[in-house]
Image (cartoon, rainbow, N blue to C red; front, top):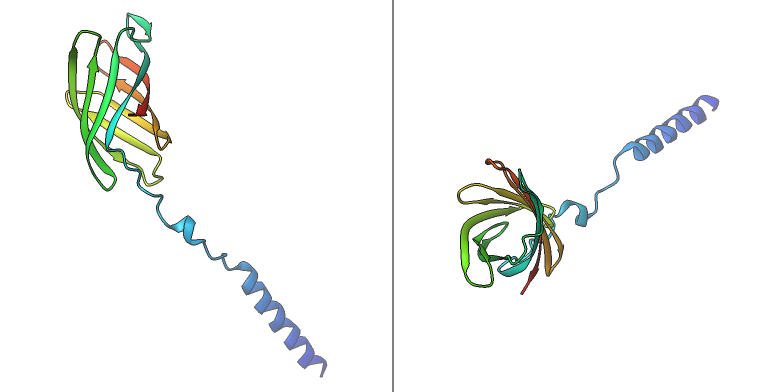
Length: 146
């Protein structure tokens, strides 16, 4: 009888140990990808940066608008427009990809330059622009959807 009780206790401990060591089932929310934000529209705002040999700048009298004209899932494209009070002086085509988190993304511009971005809210984003040419440039652009 002692042997029978010992065997039952060992089996009970083994069953409990197996149950305690298996991973907990992951929640459905954790396994699903984040929702893809809709970026189509015009995003306008301010720029602050540094240009090699020129120094820090807040790009006075400059305006930046990112026009997202097409989006298919996590891939999007459009143009970035730089203008001052008198005229548009630079228009650059770009394409971007939203990361699986649904909040961060990357952009590459025609002719050079790239940005990493963060969607701060459904109506506001921030870009960190990098251009590796001479002179190099780095800027932080804060844009709101209009």
